[in-house]
Image 1 (tube, rainbow, N blue to C red):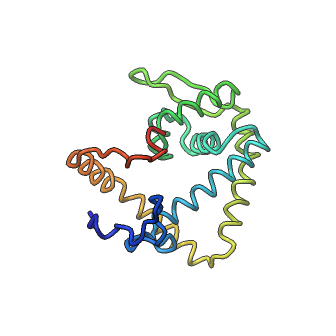
Image 2 (cartoon, rainbow, N blue to C red; image 1 turned 90 degrees about the vertical axis):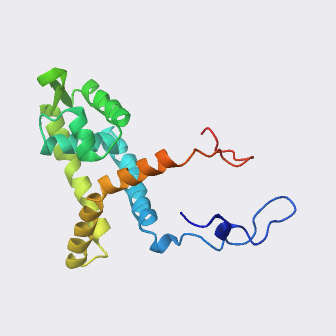
Length: 190
């Protein structure tokens, strides 16, 4: 944990506004979580707009369709693990795709439902693939082939840190009392 006094503002005006840059702050251009988050947001938001416009589904639905193209017969829990998405988001997307008859379910072991693309889902996948691949091509445009290989390798290694992050987060949650937002914080409860 950082020293709380290290982030104390140097100047606060008469109305309580901090007017100077904080001495202890994140540089977005060298903070990996910010850069990864920005790229992710760019891809998710832009992808949702394009996929909704062209196909009537968003990025989350595309991710389910794509995952089932690779892993037919997956359960919803398995899709959540493969895609790294929340169960509630997966549930909404799966229901949307089932309503549109793009995927279908089959009873599996111990009450699980195994999911498969329908013929219409496979056709949708084929239509969406060129758009997804063009978006990747544009993202790679400024990178050399070796940079792409190194980037993908580094991202896979970061994904391997998932269990370490989960452990760290559990330790923080278990050992630190929850703090209330500062008075006047309008994001409280949002």
